[in-house]
Amino acid sequence: MPPTTQPSSPGEQAVPRRFASGRQFEIRRGDALAVVTELAAGLRLFSRDGVQLTESYGDAHIPPNAAGITLAPWANRIEDGIWYLDGKKQQLDITEVSRNNASHGLLRNSSYALVAEDEFSVTLEAVIFPQHGYPFLARHRVHYEIDAALALRVSQSFINDSAAPAPFVLGAHPYFRIGDVPPEEMVLTVQARTRLVADERKIPRSSVPAEGDFNLGGGRGVGALDIDVSFTDLEFDGGIARHTLSAPDGRSVSLEQDENCAFVHVFVTDTFPGRTKAVAFEPMTGPANAFNSGEGLRWLEPGETFTMRWGIVGAL
Image (cartoon, rainbow, N blue to C red; front, side, top):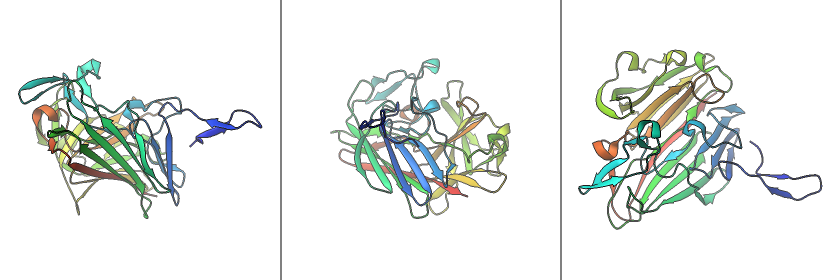
């Protein structure tokens, strides 16, 4: 990654470098490198031994296709931006105009403040202020750490500073790759028993067994996939569910998520800039429209904290 400062010309003092995604926080351990952004507490890059394991983007750009951002106080979408609190209609801003939804929470375009950092970790936090559609005061704290096994571990905490219980769903939006391996040559594996069936506005209306073309447990070639689907009833082993992208040479990268993250959204798209295909595994505590369906929706009491954990593990 580029340095955060650079000389403006020979002999002149270094000046701060500007990034569209704000300040860049680099953490390193062994051959692992993670770059975290001030904007949306996003993951801009995770690599091992120079092999890029997540999609990234340029200095002058904000995250394309929401790459790497963290999501609070809801993930995915809220239909028409409307939900009800004690029978009173709440209207959120419409941020996905094409489908008339409120999308990806309230902090997508927010700056996160530095709470703590060291060689191996960084913690950022942003405040959600009471506003139309969400009358609660809360904080979203995100901690990134490279562990001794050189995996990236992430915890996202929701802290309710309000005087009343606050509803929330947390999520994240990382995209995965394995260096320069063509996406069409890779295989995607997701261990889940149930998929959510969404309408044309990407709002879930029902759930069915993850069968047929949506049974990803045995692995499916990325080249044949074009999906935008949420799954639940994940298969947890020791409290962890894993979803994997594999290359023909045996290398792989996996998303791991804990049992507080009961949903994963799988997005395979040809719209990511500069890539023929891009793959996102999105850990979520609840699905789209949870503020209305109640599925996966949590209410946090005043003064309490909730934490979800996920991570990225490379096998190189």
